[in-house]
Figure 1 (cartoon, rainbow, N blue to C red):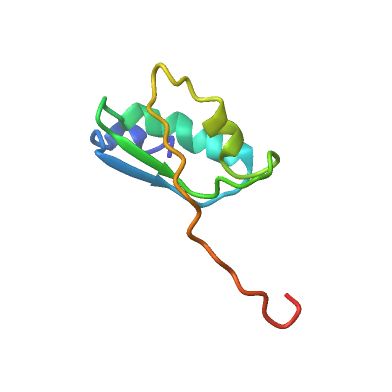
Figure 2: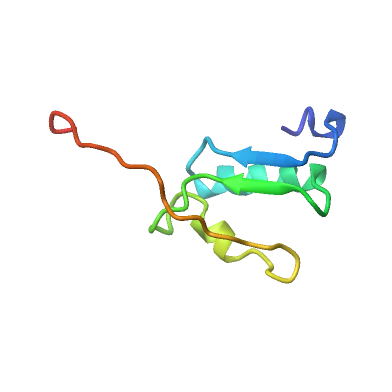
Length: 84
């Protein structure tokens, strides 16, 4: 993102999903804020019940005076197949 962020317009909607490391998610969030306006909606995937990965740590530490935060109910369901 650092090479293109200054060429992107302000976004109305951003979906952050990809890397699961906190470092990657924080990096994505850092750059996304540069293309937001006061009405931009940012949706994060992978708000897990663990603190070591996913976006939960970042989301839980967002400034609620600056950002409106809503935690949506989980929708993903995975069936264990063949011992995996």
